[in-house]
Amino acid sequence: MTTADSLQREPMMTHPLSGITVVSVEQAVAAPFCTARLADAGARVIKVERPEGDFARGYDDVANGQSVHFIWLNRGKESVVLDLTQADDRARLEKLIARADVLVQNLKPDALARLGFPIERLRRDHPALICCSISGYGDDGPLAQRKAYDLLVQAESGLCSITGGPEGPARVGISIVDISTGATAHAAILEALVARGRSGQGCDIRISMFDVMADWLSIPLLNAEGGHPPQRIGLAHPSISPYGVFPSKDGAQILISIQNDREWRAFCRHVLHNPGAADDPRFSGTVARVRHRQDTDGMVAGAFASLRRDDLVARLIAADTAFAEVNDMAALSAHAHLRRTEVDTPAGRISFPQPAALFDGASRPCGPVPALGADTERVLAEHSGTSRPAKVP
Image 1 (cartoon, helix red, strand yellow):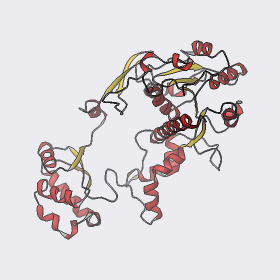
Image 2 (spheres, rainbow, N blue to C red; image 1 turned 90 degrees about the vertical axis):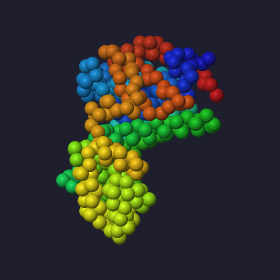
Image 3 (cartoon, helix red, strand yellow; image 1 turned 135 degrees about the vertical axis):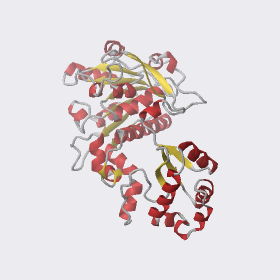
Image 4 (cartoon, helix red, strand yellow; image 1 turned 180 degrees about the vertical axis):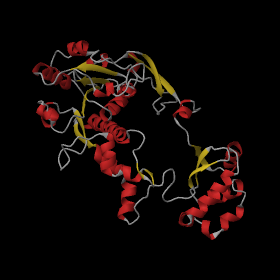
């Protein structure tokens, strides 16, 4: 058993990243999202925090006086407090990195280099080290030094322009840029670990929040460049009809999606009780239904308004129509499909949604959330030497 193996917590020993040590100089959401997933998979994640802590610790106080952001994003990690303005603590970080497999950081571009840790030097000193740097706009270019937070990049990338309704642009209701960036970093690190297993060489990964969002916006971008800029139409689809929300007689908000003519025919027969509508030239084919969206949606809205929720749902099921109810967070909390997990935190156990992946039919447990600096003395004592432990091939 290697030194890195021996440091793994017992429940994590059978996980795929057992034996992998991650040092993360991180804060907020994007990098912590990535490293939380690495910790879930069994990696030892040493979270380096400034003396006042990751500022996400203060985002809210909803979870027994603690930040729900921090709890969700930092389970299974160890908290080490270092003041990187001090030479002694920079030397301690150097020792942590020397024995790590992966370094993750989301400081401003060049900030780590100014502290004495340029990625190029770290890769030269530690050829097997995988470095993942997350930034707002990359390392160069006109916006490279601009501060970048989730909503700012939602706006700058154009995401807000296609979100919301005709009355104006809107923010996506979660930190979609941060989360997608963290997921991209997680996938890139896993790829680099696979490649290192073959070559023995680490990698320098650079990921910008803007690049991630631009990638995810490829479809609306290409439509716009092709002369069909997407319009904000709320809970509807710009190129499919009927695909939107229609209220029932008793006020239930039902969102339906008709993807092709076969579904449309079944919908007309079982839901509208108007099979002849399937042969009406105005509604024959997706393009025609979109071109006559007002008539299409009007016919659907009239039928829905005449039916109570339970009767409507029964018809939709009979037609095998894709549909969903427009729920709020209270409905999600009570939803039959919501799977939950619990984690230990400094203020007691907290329940939140279980990470989605099932492995051989089972969920992985999430590790505890650390108090600020809870692991500093122990981790620094373990890393008092400078030699890198041998790695399992």
